[in-house]
Length: 148
Image 1: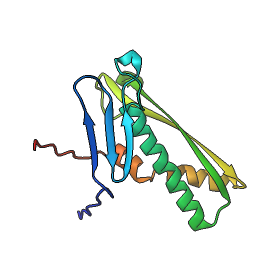
Image 2: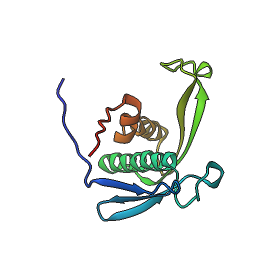
Image 3: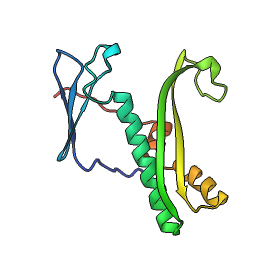
Image 4: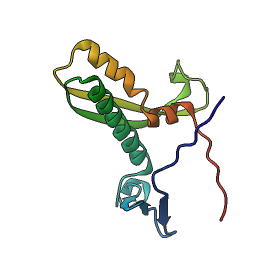
């Protein structure tokens, strides 16, 4: 099996103090923040890590659909992706591979506007599962950690 290494455009650096959960994130020239909600002990100074994960999946989904429709010259006017993360009990998940106590689940609703046929809409739904972030989340990844 051949592997091709694809890297992030810019290094992502996350800084936080031990005083709370708030994190400053830099990705190249971009700066954003993450925090936990107040009910989880944070100050709600930014999206939670799971909200950022949802944002990554939603952005990738929308970009992938737009790129595919543009290439096919389909009349896709806009894409709205709504995501919700939850934990579900494995016994409630008939199609899951694991029977651990809890599994992560993301519900993704995709709203397409434009004069699309039903076949085009169905194909775009299929293409949504091919966005790179979706594939990473569903096919797994290796994370190599080291102290520096």
